[in-house]
Each structure stands twice: as structure tokens, then as C-alpha cells.
Length: 495
Image (cartoon, rainbow, N blue to C red; front, side, top):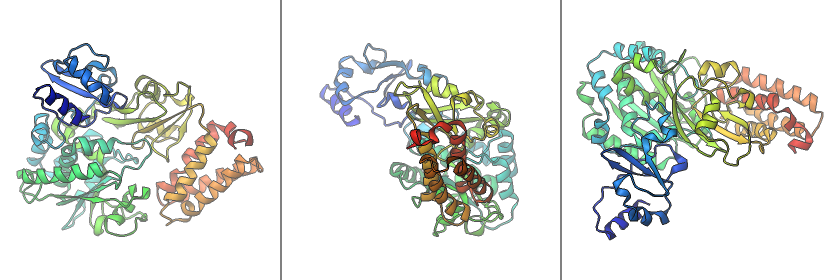
């Protein structure tokens, strides 16, 4: 598309400045072309290759023109206008690798303020913000940082978990591909806050573009003095490297990630000790995911209290929800906590792509519970989801219409655990295998009542006995499917 636009402009003798600015997350309107004017950016989409000539014929470079693909001002598109974009304020707007673009839109403002403050002050600011880990566990970020700060050691580390493996998630990828300096800035601030001098981004192997962009961004940030022996003129050292992941879902668990980063097989460590005390190479380590670090620059730039003003009760700030599955308008939606799941599905997602009624929604990745329509009015915050036995996790939302077979989805959840378990603990390693077998018996109608009771007992054993969330949460989708969609587990429906 970019090549064709340049070629068409040249053929017409037009001099244009074409910027590849990443995605705004309006996926159903992509490829999206925006024209920058004095009034703002005018959007056109979704554009196919055959549409390019007609756009030039309509003089689309003027912005406000008549064309079937004209969307008006991009910022006025309802899907975007209803959001509260804090973390994603620049994503899809700037040239991802342009330091000038980044600085022009408040980039490094938080770091500039952080440099003049003490480590304890930085940790306190994060505590005031109420930021909780955006990777799934939702542990208070400030408390984790305080532990690392208070643990004496000659060497400390900052580790970014960028092994984004949950179904339907892509927010981390968008940050790294479209606004990499935000992640870099957040990690530098974290290093200043806890006294760490070395950072690592543990990147999902399947993200080659993110790998390329991050390495280039790190090189440019180092050349500009933001990284290195005198990071951002702070008088302190902070170095940053990207390390590719091992292609295993379990390496998204923080201790398994650390094992992999050390060059070992990615297997879960028993806790305690916590990574904040004994982490990478046995040293105090901050482990947060991409979205957590990406929230830090805005917190330091505008203040923790400003960030905390977003959100609901104990769930402060915003969360980028990722809408996927059977939806008309899949994409990224950043909202303050406290809205309802139903709004995400229907107001933003536009209902199912198939036009059939929504039957189930899985939130929080492959270990999240399946929710029925009766639960769609649940508030989008950590506690409200916890009260119904569900998790927000990384914010992934996968929608299914009425054609879905929930018995097969339950079986898939157990089978996923079979494939992805690190094998260290018995409840996860053996329990998931037995779980698939028992679900197959239930679907086949083999002593259904007794096997459902056995499955429930097996799920409880996995929840209580597993070392990590892989085995401890696999039962969530299974139990929710049994509870809310029992009709799918008989032989006529489930076979």
C-alpha cells in the first residue's frame, strides 16, 4: 500500500511525505490512511490497493473531500473518541522510531522529572498512582518496586515480560512496534527507582517486527544519551537489551521467564523467595510486563494522583482491552476501569461478525473463565471480575457466537495445559492429561454424573496444588463452561 501510494504520487508529480506510523487499533478500518491537515487528521479506510487511484482523483490530500472511504476527522470516529487513551496516546500517531516525534508529544517528560528525584520518591509516586501489574496477577507495582529498592545488593535488574502469549492479545506488540520509546522510558525510570543498572526485554519469538523496532530504538536512545553510563544525564547507569523468548507459553510466568533468560529450560520456580528478592541470577529483580512499564512515563509526567483519578475503586488508571474473536469491529480499546463488559462487546465491538447472538466471552486469555450473557453487565475492574470467578488478565477479550461448542472449548483449555505445562508439578502435568480424558468421557455420555463430579474434584486439586497459574487457572474456563453451559456436555450436543 505504501509503495503504491508513493508510486501514484510520483506519477502525478506530487511531493508527499509518507510516514508509516503504526496502528491506532481500529483494525476493521485498516489499512487506514490519514492525511495531516491544519484541522487535524482525516482518515480514509479500509483502503484496498485498487482504491489508491480513486483517492488521488478525489484530491484526498486536502483531507475533507467526498469519497466512499472518507471517515472524517480520525479523532472524531466514535470508536476512538469514546476511549481514554493514556498509555496509547501516541500509538498510531508518531513515527515509531522518531525521537523528535516522541519528544514533541510529551515523550521523556516523565524521565526528565524522574532524574531530579530520589529513588524513594519515584516508588512513592507509583504507589500513589495505584498502578497494578497489567500482566495478569494485578499485584501493586509500587509494592514490588519497594521490595527491590529495600533489598541490598550490588547488582539489580529490570526485566520486561514481553512474551505476550494470551489468546486475543496484541497490546504489548502495538506498544513495541508503534511507540517503543515509551517502554524504554518506563524501564529507565524503573531502574532509577530501584537502583538497577541493567534491563532486559524478554520478547516473544513470534514478534520479528517488534524485535527489529526495539533494537533500533535502543540504539537511537543510546546514541541520544538516554541509555548508557550516564542515562538521561542522571549520573547513573542503565543499559538495555532485547532477548528472544523460547516459544513457550509457560515462559510468560515470571519465574519461568527468569530461568529461560538465564539460559535454562523455562520451568517454574517455587516461591518464596520472590523474584523481587532473589530474581535474575539470584539478584533483586523487578519483573513487570510491557503495559505496566508503558504506564510509568505518564504517571511521572502528570503525577500519580492524576493517573489514579482514572479508574474505579481499587482498579486505578486505564487498561487497553483487546477485542478479538467473532466481532465486527475488533481492535484496541483503552478505557478507565469501571465500564461494563457489555459496552465493550456491543458499543465498541459492534456485536458478532456473523450476525448471530453472542453466546460466550472469554476474558483474560486461555486461562480466563468463559462468561455467559447474564454476566455481561459485570464492571471491568479486578475485584468485580474476581467476585464472579473470572480474571481481567492482560485485557484480552475473545467473543463467540451461538455456534460455539462449550464442551469442546473446555476440552481445549485442558489440552492447552497438556501442551504448555512445564511439567514441574504433578497437578498441572498429570491433572491436565486426566482432565482431557474425563471431559471426553463426559461428552461421550459415559457415566456423565460421576465423571462431572470427578472433573470438579480434579479442577479443585489443580487450583490448590499447582505451583503457578498455568495449572492453577486452567480449571477456570473448564468450571465456568460446566456451570454456565451444561447443555453442551451431553452426547448429542458435545459429540
